[in-house]
Image (cartoon, rainbow over all chains, first blue to last red; front, top):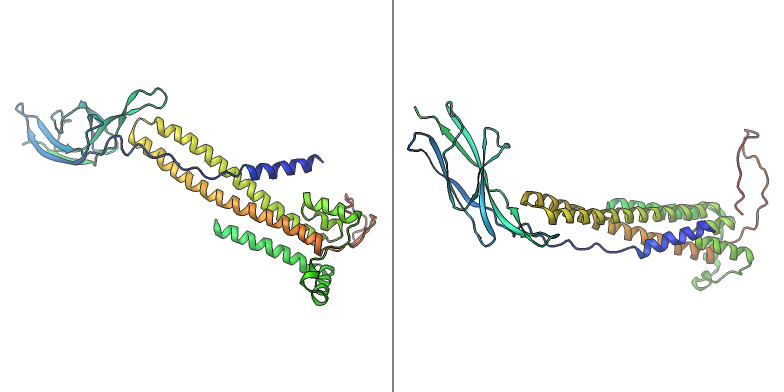
Length: 144
Length: 190
C-alpha cells in the first residue's frame, strides 16, 4: 500500500511540478558603459628630458554614465597587464615612464572605461569596469 | 537528443508490438476478433468478475501487472518496462530541469553582483547556455510524460477490451531445466 501511495505521489508531483522555462532577465552589462573606440597610437617621441614617450588617444560613443578611464600596459607578454594610470578623464594619454629599453621594446596597451551601476543589495551607486578596448601594440626603439 | 527520444519511442512501440505478437494466445484472440467481429464489437466490455476487477486495480497502479495477473506475462512485462522507462525518463528530465533552474538563479545573483564587464559577460554567457539546456530538458520531459501517459492509457484499454483471463495458475515447484534442484526463490504472481 505504501508503494502505491508513493507511486501516486511521484506521478502527482511530476505533473504538478511541470513548470515552463522562465525567460532570462534582460542583460544590463552591455549598456552601463560602452567600449572605447578608435584606440590608436598618436606618436612615439622623446620628452624634454630625453626619455622615450608613447602618446595614444581614444574615443567613446556615450559619456552619460562614464566616471573616468584606466590605462593598462603590458611588456612583452600581452597577458600581464598592470595599471599605469587611474581616474583619468582625458582622451589623450602620454606614457613617458617606460621600462628600460635595451634595443627595442614591445608594449601592449588597454583602456578600460569606468562607469557606475546600482548595487542590487544596498541600492547605492558602485563602480563598474566597462569592456576593454582593442589592444594597442607599440614597438619603441632605443635612440642612438 | 531528439533522435534519442525518437529511438526510445520506436523501441517502446516495438516492445509492445513484439509482446503482442509473441503471445500466441493473444494473437489468436486478436485474429478471431478481427475475423468474426466488427469494430464496434471489438470494444465490447467483457464480463467483469472479481479476478478481472483485482487485475484492473493492479493495472491502474502498476501498468502491465493486471495483464500478468490474468496470465499474459510477456505483454504485461512489456507494458511495465515501457511505462517505468518513460516514467524514469520524465523524472530524470524534470530533475535536470530543476537543476538548471537553480543554476540560473545562482548565476543570476553572481551576474547582478559583478563589478566588471568581463565577469558579467562570463556569467551572462553561462546563463544563456544553461537556459538553452533547460529548454531542451523541458521538451524531453514533456515528451517522456506524454509517452508515459499514453502507455498507461493503452495498458488500461488493452486490459479492459483485449486481455482475456487465462485463469488462475496453481503455484507449485516445477523444474524447467535439467539442472535439477537449484537453490532459488520463487514468487507467485497470480
